[in-house]
Image (cartoon, rainbow, N blue to C red):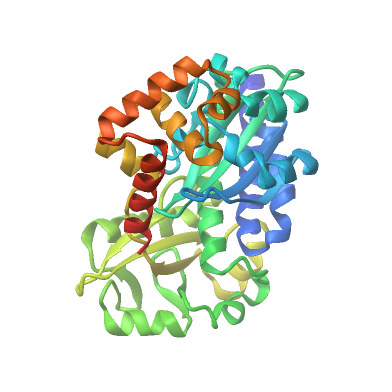
Length: 386
């Protein structure tokens, strides 16, 4: 029993240290590669990437990575992102949900037959992957992906469990990095570093008492539209949001790992109809402890305006016309590469199969030509983006 307890304690220490590194990366983008490397070691993955990809024109950018071949990342950005048959389906999953690319998005057989599988995955020896969407909007989706190779084999239950534990913390760090525009912030002078942010920022104790607020923060509590300062404590106007924030502040005092999913993206409803989202970053571990000691604080709260919660074009089209995943893959392959023969080669299916799916698409959307399908999807994109 003692040995089991010792093993459990070592694993908890490893996880806590990893979470601390992830949150330090929220303030210093230069630490992301190291944090992802340690995440791979903990999860049991060979490589990890943090990327964002547009949902319509499909441009992609790898922000940070560890263990991935730079040559193949460049090839993906330049060419293969348009040929990835799993991407349209990946957009349907909610933020923070851990999933397997195979079979949650596409069957292994279909993935292996695709040009993407043959030319991009297999040369790297990649055989399996887990992913989680970190932030979604109509225009783009940011995603964490970890992969396994032939040497390490397929993902097992332990890997899935550990991945699900890490995802919420990476999501929080990414969202906070976005709030501060991914600029390096010195923990020792946290207040001075963040005073010029357009986003509202508050440094608080475990009780919620405000130790420091930047100019935007003072303006927000002055208006008391979504947040207020009652008896010197930061509080949300909405009762549910207030409960979540209070729990987050208390949990932050116990360390990074204890925060869990509390305060990752707390929706704040304003009295005037405006909507904001708050992100809580603990200050009690990692290099952030310097700031904690300097301000006798437990957490920093970042608040920014919330984006409209609208579906991406693939989600909107699929829902409107009742498209199956296979039909959706054919539809977006048609948009990306064109003719039936080209779609057949990209997806690795017979031309007759492509034609069958195309006919289903024509029937469901009341169109008659591929050009009309492209115009239809473009119409959905324009309606969402403008």
